[in-house]
Image 1 (tube, rainbow, N blue to C red):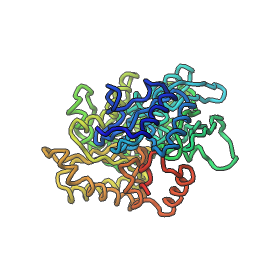
Image 2 (cartoon, one colour):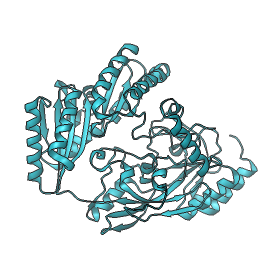
Image 3 (cartoon, rainbow, N blue to C red):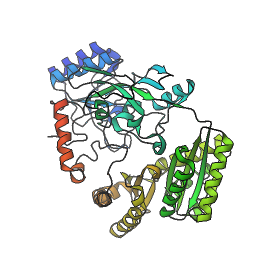
Length: 482
């Protein structure tokens, strides 16, 4: 174990004065296990922090940042640590501060007339949803990790989820931010205004910046009226082209009531059936693709059900749906969504895999999948494709599982870079993005210059240099280290 330098010891002492002894954890003088903060969610990277600091309010965050800026100590902001691109854990140097925001978890205010809720960055998404519901409203952001991810992390990565087709990404749900700058100053931007045309949109600059431009400490988010009814259907479709055709019909027949549209490949569902047989996956054995649709209606359940039945009848008449079931109860609907959310856990149980979070124009997804599947099968024989995702907004989780019987670690060592290059080249060819909702983090930071417009990258570097000239905030994420 490397001894702390005098400067590091002095910094830790100062941080304890700011946040309290119990809220600054180190390897040297605590029996606490720091691995929950040092290891990424997929357990592929394990860094080493100088300290884990847990501030209790915005003033403490500002004071911590000022202390770190004075000593040139870099800071890694962290929420629930559920990210998938290694964007919220320290490197292995033992010199970085992990700034855990989980103590800052309060709901500060609900404004029913303005349809807004103001929460601190460490508020768990599920708790935000519950607070909105208790106030009689809907907060629509919904993710598989909603029981542990935080709204600060959701904003930092501009998370998407299952209802983007109706409500948009986290960016579209945010009206204001409170942010601590790289110099330790506080930007008080929690206005909740829907119109504010007074210069550069700093809010949207911070959202999706992954903690590299400022530290989000609180946010004012939009609320919506609770729907009168919310119905879920599960449909078998004979091809990806048919899934896109069904999406078009759903837009026509359901309009803004279409809140979710997920596509799931047969192999992805077979993994759920294999590892979680108690979930009873419907219709998957006799079709290459299944679609999960959600219709939220402002009138009544009978109106929503009539809309759904009319849609599915039309889809079956046209041949784009071969079979379908509509959930009869809320419990059944939750069960269908639980199947969809279990794909990620099922493929993790099956073994290590190569994950891709990509977006393609919806009209080009069938051709992309067909061509890229064939290309991977030819270049890496035996690979198994775990295709699923948010077809309604063009976002696929296009994951590649090792061939049957092949060790996952060995498969990744020998093929990950090759597979990534092949997939990303195809994404670029089809006019897509190599990161749809997970962010860039450390995992894709060296790939970004290959697939991002050079002028856009130059502008991003200029913004980073202007707002964080010391490169102290989450260095080496989003943009490569200088």
